[in-house]
Length: 153
Image (cartoon, rainbow, N blue to C red; front, side, top):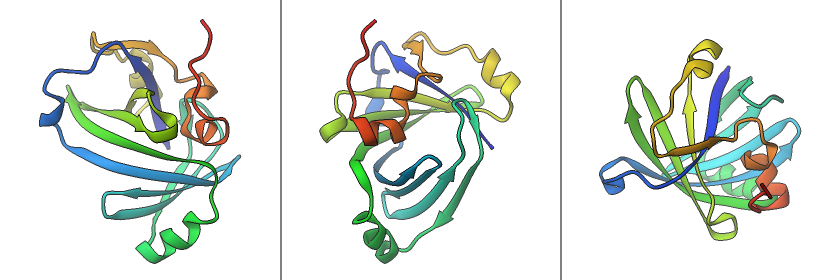
């Protein structure tokens, strides 16, 4: 079970280059349910995610580089590229995604939780802006189909 909240941010945290960073490329074979392939640095993963916004089933299976390349040509829509910084925050890790290419200038912070109660009681750091967990337009699978456009407020 993945329990995750997503946030826009108001500013990048200080010393960003001091945190671990991963280069990610991902594409979608299907968006309902979500079937995604991802290259993260030198690792390759096939992921299934059920429907839902904050809570959903998630299963990850390893892929070889060859299998990833084979499936990559079968993905639909926009292929997402981003840099992911892993920032410790208390007992959690903030995954700060800085999107590149067609999905720039989007920047999102995601935090995963062991329970719904912890997710609901989480107090974000001051550099977070608004919680966009329940807005489909900020989910990567949606962005892969429709692109990223700042919603009207």
